[in-house]
Image (spheres, rainbow, N blue to C red):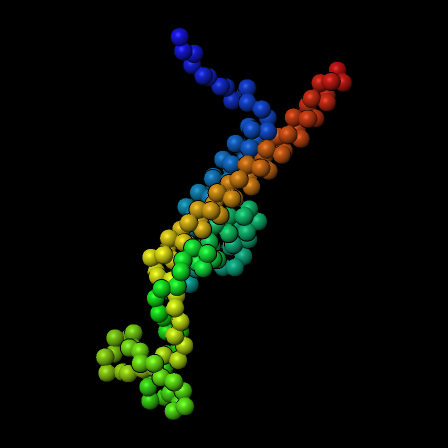
Length: 173
């Protein structure tokens, strides 16, 4: 006969309960920031033509650690995940404006003007956009999991401290 494994929340150790509670707070804060706080701040501070969030609006997310997850796309160490495979021009100039002594690598104008000929003065290899996108997504998930674990750890430590104080108080009685 099989016994059903039934664990009550109250039977869990205090450190585990507090860890679960703070992890839930982490997820709840993320959802509040994403669906309530940022849209509300952007709506109240409308700047034409795009709503924007003022600098002070990021302070709560910075204090709770969630800003690092929201901005993870800009802080992704793409070099760790992707090899440079595509060439990209970082300094393009009209062919007529390039000094004669400079080396001119013929490069098309990306604005769509087919008559405009140009030179790339700074041509470098970069990772493909597909790999960069995957790296940014992976990095974002890694930061989100790390933040989740930090919140769990804070709750677990608080739970351990309280659990030890309760044990000391019970021993004195």
